[in-house]
Structures are given as structure tokens and as C-alpha cells.
Amino acid sequence: MSDRGILIVLSGPSGAGKGTICAALRQQMPNLVYSVSMTTRAPRVGEEEGVSYFFRDKEEFQRLIKEDAFLEYAQVYDNFYGTPKQHVMDLLAEGKSVILEIDIQGAMQVKERFSEAVFIYIVPPSLDILSNRLRDRGTDAADVIDKRLSKASSELALAHRYDYIVVNDVLPDAVEKVASILRAEACKIKRNKEKIQYIYKQYGGKKE
Ligand code: 5GP
Image 1 (cartoon, protein in one colour):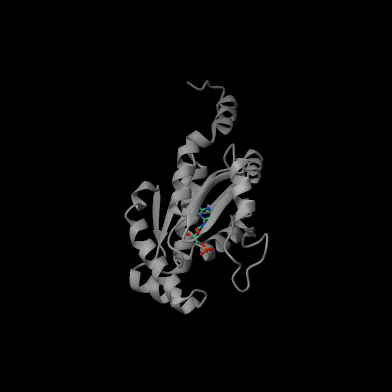
Image 2 (spheres, protein in one colour):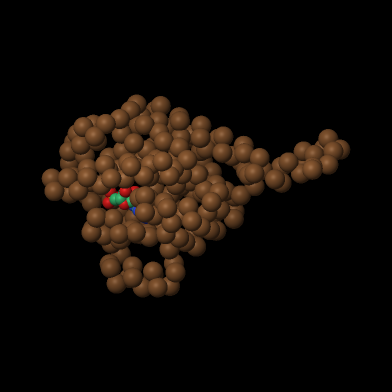
């Protein structure tokens, strides 16, 4: 891997398959750590504290905002979501790559602070397919699904701010594409300065 861990930001509409892609990636890439976000929304059936999210009330969330405890945070629909900062910074310093599954508002905040992060937008093949996936998932009420679909349309207009776009049509293909992006990013010259120094020394040359 590269000198430091890579900060990877994955966004896309709910129902794009980000969670499934993340889970598959972590199986393939053991050095990849998923950052567990904090949220004020209620847990859904099957969600676990500290695994899916850290579930907190609004007062606690506001307190943490004041303490500057978030790398980024945003209000998504009617709730707050944020990335706890310290844990991510420690992992990157240890050389681990960290994946943030966050919305576009949060992604743009990360972009301001970490120009070297990698931004990937996951998109379903069509709005119809997204709509069917959300309904089949059965976790959200009809009005919530409508909100998610309208957010998906407005967000897509901003997808050009990301470095990569991956259409999640066939899941294993989408996973392979994201894995390829991460492998290529890890090979970038700018991420391998220590390795380059070492190689130059071996060859008895000098780096310009
Ligand atoms: P859900 O409620 O479906 O779990 O997530 C709703 C949206 O919030 C998704 O687009 C998800 O990517 C986003 N989200 C989850 N965690 C965070 C976070 O820590 N920060 C931001 N900005 N968005 C998040």
C-alpha cells in the first residue's frame, strides 16, 4: 500500500448499493476500515449500535459539533449524520485506508480539507431501478422513499465533483471497479514518496 492510508469517500443515493459494495470491498481488502458514522436518526430493524451507526440524540450531536469532533457532518432529510474525526485521523496515520460512506454535502466538506482523498460516486442504472430497490428493501415508508428519490435526482447533478463514477448494475462488476480504482490510487507516485526514495537508493540513483 501507499505511505499513508487513503481516505476514500463513497456517495450515492440510498439504494445505490453503497453498503453492499463496502462490505464486499472489506472482504477483498483487509487493510480497509469502514468509518462508523454517528446519526440522530432512529435505528432500523437489524441495525446495531457501533456497527451500523453510533445512534445519539440531537443534544449530544450538537455538543459534539461544538467540540469540533466531526471530520464532516450534515443534515440529511430530518436527521444529522457525521464522521467522528479522531478515529479516522488515527487510522490514516497508521497507514490504514478508511472508507467514508457519506452524502454529497459531507463529501464536499471532506474535499475542502483533504484534497488527496478519493471521491467515488455510486449510481444505480436508472431512477426506475432505484425506486424498485427502495420499495423492495421495505425499510422506508412511501413518503420517505419519495424524499430519497427527489434527493437522488438533485444530487446527480453534482456528481461531476467526484473523481470517479461507478454504475452499480451488476454488483460484482461494481465492486471490481471500485477495487480497481483503489488499487490504482495506491500506486500513484504522489502516494509513494517513501517507496520511491528506497527504490532510487537501490538503483544508486538520485531522485530529482
Ligand atoms: P441512511 O439513513 O439511509 O442510513 O443514510 C442516509 C444518507 O446519509 C445516506 O446518503 C448516507 O450516505 C448519508 N450518511 C451516512 N453517514 C453519514 C455521515 O457520517 N455524514 C454524512 N454527511 N452523510 C452520511
